[in-house]
Length: 303
Image (cartoon, rainbow, N blue to C red; front, side, top):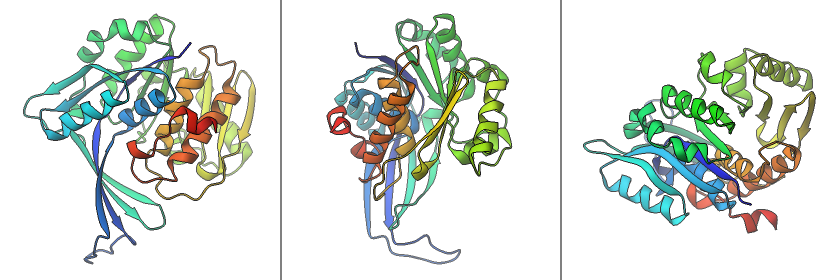
């Protein structure tokens, strides 16, 4: 049985500028090439879940513009249920400008656009979809009150909630953390949230203890090329990443979360295997350019 995953989050068009290195202040540099792709944390996570064969639904907003039409079309192509995506008249669809260096490192500037208009009313209209799901996933590129509303509905229906606390927010409302079952920060996000700098296994365990203290039962801290650390049910372990050459790290973390939500059993009994699967998926993502274009299908991950 495929997992049913609901994502509430952002939808962006990524405008990618391919450059050798970042310009210095006052410097003008030449772009090597320009490309456009579907993106946004929420949309990337939904595409990753759908391509790993989860039955995926989306709650969000786009503007009434050509970017909005493009994004709805792309999401539908991946069999994502878009009936809870509202088209907002006179609003811009969210977009990001990505400065992609030759090293594969990226710097991102984004305009929230219609993403900033997602409300708890959007969640109210999708209540039934949430109640029929297995996992509800959200992040911080859309307003937090909507995330709280979605997690409240999920918790009342005994569904598993996954919070990707990115872009990092220093003061996450306690209300949201209390409704979170799985939190998935990367090491820099985790330091901002917990105040604990991650340097070794001890600091990872202390960070996990911080989240468990807030009532979150499962903590997954992603460590880039060093893999990830998981703490759940009094057990913790570090799971290695797959060694690959990164071309573009855009959407690596989002792919991890989407793939995880498609593979994980709702009782979290297969957490180790699901994380290995999610790591494999994100290791394929970083080897290609762009967000949507680089997210792998299930068959590719299993190979």
